[in-house]
Structures are given as structure tokens and as C-alpha cells.
Length: 186
Image: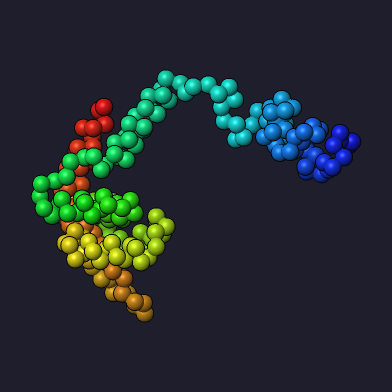
């Protein structure tokens, strides 16, 4: 095949669609005016999921609005009121101070509601947070009385500390979720 651009050969020539001005696939598509198609010639929704760039349907729009309201309410946690109970207030301020702390605290609360114990290694793997940071958060929370620590003996392995949150943390989480649910009705 003879391409107008003598420097374009092989896969680069296919990207330019025979246009000497195009340098990559996206620019070649704009210049040549071709649509993305697979080998059979049918429209490929994996490459371009919304061919007409149409707005979402009414049902999808409602779901999108609901999801955005929930996300705004969750991300605006710093403006929700703090508890007047000193222990809950201290825990709220500690876990609100850093997003990673908030993730660790929320994950331990979630596992406690599921009646499971969680290890530091599981938290590190789940959120890709450094072991040192997770260890420090768990240590601080145990010292403050927000987490309960249990050491599980294992054969031929070092003992693994497991964590759950205390009843006061679960109560504070329930109050917080009730507040957030009321805020979702914007």
C-alpha cells in the first residue's frame, strides 16, 4: 500500500489513515472523519460507549442525581456537627483529620458491623496504605479506647493482632449515618 506520507510506514501508517498531517489515532479520526469500527464493521461500544453523545435517559439521570447527592454528602463530612460526648468528639476529630485515617476507621467499623475482625495487613492490601501508617492509626485507636485488639495465636507463625471497634464507635457511626441520611434529602 502506498501512503502519501513516505515517513509513515507499518502501524504508524495505519494510525494516520493515509493523512500526512495526522500523528496519532485520535487526531487521525478527527481529520479523516472516520468512525471507530471493529473488524466486522459494526460500531464498537467498547471504544466509544455513547456514539451520539446523548444525555442520559430520565431513569439514568435520576440514578446519577442520587449518586451525586450521596457522594457530596459523604465528601462534606467535615461540615457535619461534632458530638458533644468527649470520647466521640475526640474520635471524630482524629479520624476526620486525614482521609487515610478515615478509611482505616470506616473499614474497621464496617468489619465490626459484619461481626468480623480485621488485621493491619488486610487494611494495607485493601487501600494500598503503608504498613507503618496503619500500625500507628491502630495503635493510637487502641490507646484511646476506640478499637479493641485481639491477638490470634497461629502455629509456626508470629501472632497476628486483629481489631474491632468499640460500642461507642459503633454508636457514633450509627448517629453519623442517620445524620447523613437526613442530609441526602437535599
